Length: 91
Image (spheres, rainbow, N blue to C red):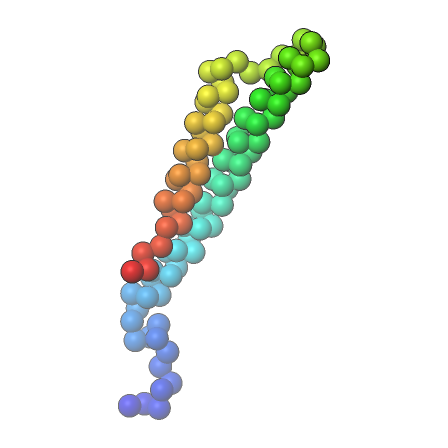
């Protein structure tokens, strides 16, 4: 034995590579989370704008059903991809 001067990463270089890969995926996925959140906020604000326009009998232009669906679909896909990129293999 050499007195315990070696740390765990020197003994097993695979641990160093996997931890670096996890950091890169989290950093790469953060903008995806931001875009997904913004799309969801746009979806909710469009619904609230439509509800307020109907209640107050005001003519306000808001997105139709197709664009509303695409906002929600894009948000859901972004969240799922974000979760999959940050899933860890600690078993």
